[in-house]
Each structure stands twice: as structure tokens, then as C-alpha cells.
Image (cartoon, rainbow, N blue to C red; front, side, top):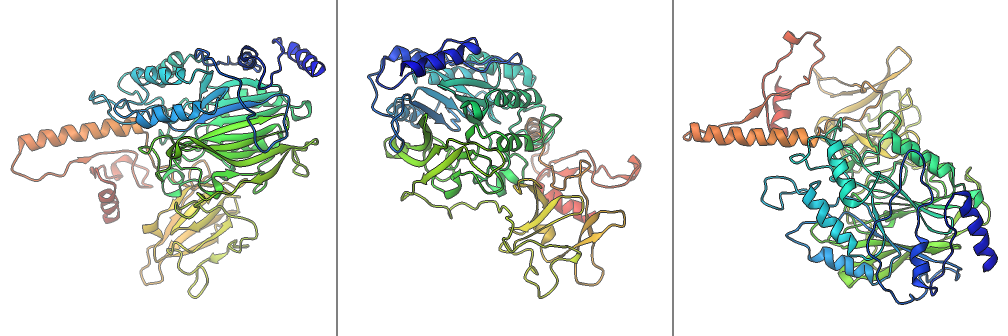
Length: 581
């Protein structure tokens, strides 16, 4: 034991940090001192939450399915909190439940406050100073160090702060953080790393995209590279949204089609969404990645995904639910608990609806050899523990194409759904097919829509053609005469309306049509003011309040050739008006 301690101390000196090793049952002071920062780079500073230490009796062995090790770690993982000062019962119960299991560290996956007017201030509560102060007090109440990654609602204080920069500074200040990201060594050669969202007002499309800026991406890649698997490092990652290629359950009708499903879903310079899965594939030291965002419980087979599939490296991906019934989509109230030692780790569920009982969901052990090419894995799944709560049919999930699934169209040329074919009714939610365009893009039909999929991971990116546009129509893929292919929609009847499905200017096909929430919120306030004015001015009449928008919806190249007639405020009325033109 002393020899192992000396080796770790020597390795720590290389980093300019004090050496340590601990095991459950040793002094609490040694255990608490174990948690330290080990990966501060010039580009960032890491933070350990300064919650006051609490007296704890020596805890029993943490793991139940791993060999006993020289050290252990326990990390409580809290999903979307959405704290509402008017309704804190489940939030406080959730904290008490977590404390029963004696965590060494708490990680919050963001979305700290409720995105509603909780204080009768006519302002959203999420992203405000008042929210940050309450949440900081809440985390301090765990009595152990903590850290946080920002979610898509955490910079939503649009009335208090004018810019994302100001809002981010307040978030960091009140939570005691120096940067949106973090890195801590919580056990010998065991790192936890977090990546936080930094955009809301500045989001080009939907504000609910969880966006990690290019500086964080570079920091993440550099930090992972400096802690390689062949030196014995293990890394666990945390982000509000999952990374593309993780394979965890997502909601196609909500997050996928709205472009806010994956971390950096819409991309950006130095921040392409594929960079995370590429790092995972090339880094067998990355053992686990935890996300929240979808408000789904852990009672689905794809709440946890394992190495394999479309090349997920050596990483296990785990969805994290919500403590409160108010925030849960399926009524279940779950948090995650990660516990492990030098032999591997266990992923567990803390079930808040059952008094905080802990449930073992998966056990992963480490092998002696590591390879990044997929021939061998640094982590070997021992067992995915079944339990009576599994229910993987309750919530509709997004289809992910698989090679050999029988739905692939090998050489799309002409109509892909001719009369009498197996794919004839593409408007039927049960019809599934997919194909490659000549430019490498992957398109497919699923749930009555045409969806674009990421070419590398085959994860869904977004909607290309909506149900109402696809219903009852033929889909053709034709050569465009310039080395590419074109998707066309048409009807069998005479005088058919032919629709060319144009790609976006960046080469993608999925429609980035969900606009920034800050702008939409301000527009809704303007509409509300207009309604109040006209109802007071002309009280005896019925009024349709409409909004004028840009950009326009035509290929006409001259401004005077484009109609700027106001569009109805409701989306369905806009669609009707657009078609009537």
C-alpha cells in the first residue's frame, strides 16, 4: 500500500500537485482532501464547490459488484433541477435522498431554474441572480464539493442581463466558478470533466441548443490527450445535452426536429458536434458520459448505451432524469449515482419516488489492454442489470439507421416509393427507409417525415420535409446533371405540384427554422401589447393580430418582387397563408 501511495505521489509531483490516495474507512480528512483539481491548463481554471465539509461516519463499501479496491469514489449526479421557489418539496427531498448514499462529490447537469415567472415579476426565473443564489444555497446544503455545467436555460435572464457575457459572468460568480467547464481528479488517475453551455441570446437558431464554445472544445481535447489511457487514466464526462453518436434515447418530436438535441447540434467554427464523438473514439480513457436535457427517467433500455453500435469507443453513455414530478416527462423521479474504484465502475439510479433507494443499473470493469481502433476495449461491460421498471415502449424514440436493417436503399435513382412497393406510403409512420445522396448526406423517411442523419454516426439531425408536405406524395432522387443528386416530391395526378427539396447553404438538408427564444419572447410581448391596445380601442370588433417578418420565403432576387404582407402570428395560419400565395 505504501509503495502504491509513493508512486501516486511521484506522479502527482509531475503535475505540481500534492500526492494522495485514500480508501473508505481511512480518516475523513484524508478522504475530503482527495478531491482536487489535476488538469488546470493555461486556457482555463477549474473549480471545486466550496460547500462546507460535514462530519461523516466511515461509510460502508461503496460498490457491490466490483472487487474490493484500495480506493473508492462516489459521485452524485443531479439532472435538470428547474428549481421553483414556490415548489421546493421534491427538490429538497431529492437532496436528502442523495445524501443518504454519502457522495464524495456532486455534479449538476444544469438547467438550474424554472423557465417561468416564479416571482410575479413578469420575468423568467431561470438565469436570474435570484435563481443563482437559491441554487448555490441548495448545493452548499449537500455538504460536499460540487460543480455545475450550464444547460440551455441557465442564461435565460434576458430582462436582468443585456448580453450572454453578462449573464454568464453572474452565473459563474454566484456558483463560485472561474470557467463554464471544469476538471477535477476525484480518485487516483480518475478525472471528471464538465462542459457548459455559453449561448442563449447569441444563438443563431434555437436558444435551446446546448452550445459549448470553441475554446472549451479545444480545452477538452487537449485535457483528454494529456491524460492517456496507457498511463492508467480514466475520465468521466458531463454535459447538459448528449453528444451526437451516443445512442441514448432522444425525442424526435421535440429536440431532434428543433435542432437542440445534441451538444452543439447546429455547430459553429471550431465547435462541430462530431468533434466530441471523434475524441471519444480515439480516447479509450473516456469511460463514461452523463447527460440530462430530455427529462426522461432511467427506465428504458437505451437510457444507458454501451461501447459498440456506430463506434462509441470505450465509453458508456447514461441519461439522467429529474428529481421533481413537475419536470419529469414520464412521472418518474430519478438521479444518477456513479461509484467505482481501480477495477471499474457502477452506474446506479437514485429513485426519489421510492424513498431514495439506490438501484444498480450497469457494471463496467477495466481490462488490462487498451486499443482505440475497436479491436479491444479499455472497458468491458460485465452486466447490464435488469429490473422490473424497464419500460422502453412508453415514449416514442428517434429511429437510428443501422447497416443491414433492411431499410437501406442501395442506389436511389428515380422514385423511391412507387405504387405497390414496400415504401409506397411514406406518410405512414411505420414506413422506414434511408439512403445516401451523392454529396454524402444521409436522408431517410421515418414517422411520416424526411429526416437527415449524421453521416458518421447516423444519429438524427433534424426534419427535412414535414408530415403535411410529404403526405400522399412520391419521393424521387434524381441526378442533377452536375455530379450531385436532387430530392423531388410530386403527386401522381395531373397538374402535379413538384417540390425541389433544396439543401441549406452549408450543405445540410435539415430545416433550421426554430428561432432564437429571446427574440420570440420579445415578439410575443409586442403581440400581447397590440392585442390589449386594439381591444381597448375597438372593443366591439374581432381582431386578428399579425406580425411582419423577414427573411422572406421566395427565390425572387429583387426586394420589390417579394411580398412583405404580414403573416399571422400562429404557425398553422402562417402555413395556410404561405400556401395560398
